[in-house]
Image (cartoon, rainbow over the protein chains, first blue to last red):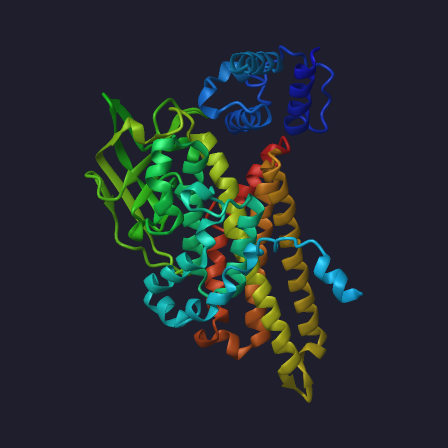
Length: 85
Length: 386
């Protein structure tokens, strides 16, 4: 896994799965359908990404599919960083 | 030798004054006729001018807009100082709402045109502001807001209504949280609307238990046409803005509460040292002293939660549980210490003239606004996976 994916995974585990067995938490695991991340959780994730990776809120496409899995979140951040560079 | 050294020592500029001290010089004006204003449920316009002169409203805003350029925690300090100085909790609450309701989200999310047009007059307190989130049928359930904004060319047309809107009867500017999309996290948008816009109607001030000098009312919208340029942030960003605002609303308004509680504790200690019964100060009786010790614990627990959570939010860390816990701890401590003060002051505490009973009435609101204590506990439980 890349450093970015590790970071995202660390954030998700700390904030949404603290104290739980995360051995089966793959990068493709569906955080929304599984109920790990609810509506307000999505808002927290977007807010975190905006702050942690300096992505302007107006540049974040507000669609749940971008935040459905650790892999999707990492890909979104990577694309946003590339676009800003 | 010492003198020569002192003369040759490099001159360091005075550090910026602690924002906590901003309110103190204005104590006499702020505390004039508080009981009478409370009895009449009247917003004290002259004292609002004093609040403006104090500079408290400017603390978190950029200097280019007339602000002081302060941090989140400096703003908390300013409001704590106001709470300690000002016995009119309603006025303090209106000031806190002024800072957070429109100015804070405008600074964080609006484009330059809206910022330069409105922020200087918001920061100075010339324009009074309110934000409209709560609805008659959806008190704490913002996810199900039903007031809608429908896109129509270059405008949006807003229909619906909001309830319990602090500052609404006196506000010049409103920030409206309304539905523009499907239910869910990205279905809300935020609009800046001026009071005299056709289609916006502000209801009569609602009589209430406490915080009576801070007016609130219903606001309704019927065919309210708002230019798309008045949208704050992109369409669907309403919850992101709300998340940013609610963290600060809780930290700011309950820093004010912390100042009020600290003042109450000081007053109670003075009373327990000087009020004598059975030939000794009442503070010598454990029934009184233990109650005051518990008040001290409540005040300092509140301070620790506010300080830690403020630091977390300022550092950009996720503080969802911390915010909910802080709000619960401080609001409930305020209510319990206000009741403690009535008990310790006895008959005097029961009279309106001492202001002690007013504190109880004011404190109850804190366990309700910005999400009730029950909602905060639900939130914490949900975040724990329960």
